[in-house]
Amino acid sequence: MSSHAGFPIDTPPTPGEVGLIAVDEHTSIGCWVHDISAQDVEIVVPDASLVPDVFMLTSSAKESIKVCRTLWRTDEMIGARQL
Image (cartoon, rainbow, N blue to C red; front, side, top):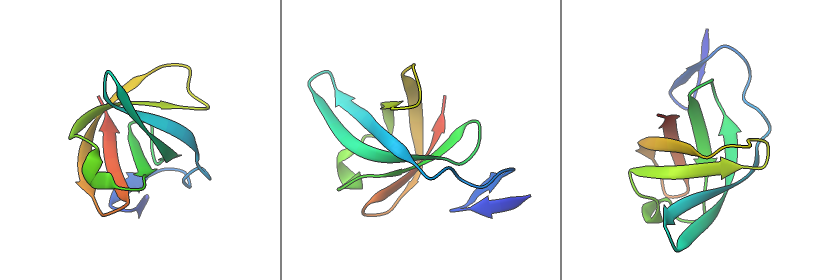
């Protein structure tokens, strides 16, 4: 099993898809979502400091809203696990 950005993966990461992070009931942030595994995602955002530790994530390929917890972050990237 290989790893990507600290996540173990069984398949290569997807090329990514457009998503939205709900910061609160009035604010969302556009993002680029890469599925790393069934539970883990890597997210690219303009400013990761604006994203709370627990947030709701939607993406163009997923019909549902996922609640995620931040595992790590850099200035423009977040690693998160779907709860």
